[in-house]
Image 1 (cartoon, rainbow, N blue to C red):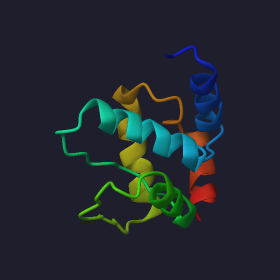
Image 2 (spheres, rainbow, N blue to C red):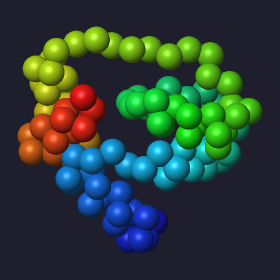
Image 3 (cartoon, helix red, strand yellow):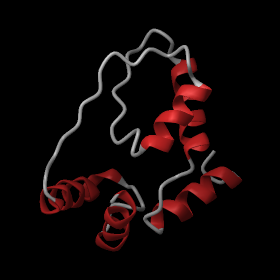
Image 4 (cartoon, rainbow, N blue to C red):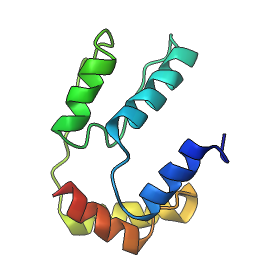
Length: 107
């Protein structure tokens, strides 16, 4: 629910450009996959780091991950992509201030 405590925490973290705790991200992904067991998922931007991956393997060891794509591009290219996405995404973190914080967090 949009007004749940978890939703409010996620919004605050995203606005700050911080990474959502891995256990929350994995839990939300598991819920979505459980609701649609016959659907294949393309998960954009996850895992963001090794901790995300190890949390996934701990919480969802039976979920098969057949492939992973890694795009190596400049910060400028990522900035342009995300700012364009922000025109229609409705995401609170698709803005320049949050984006710059995310880049620092990602490095």
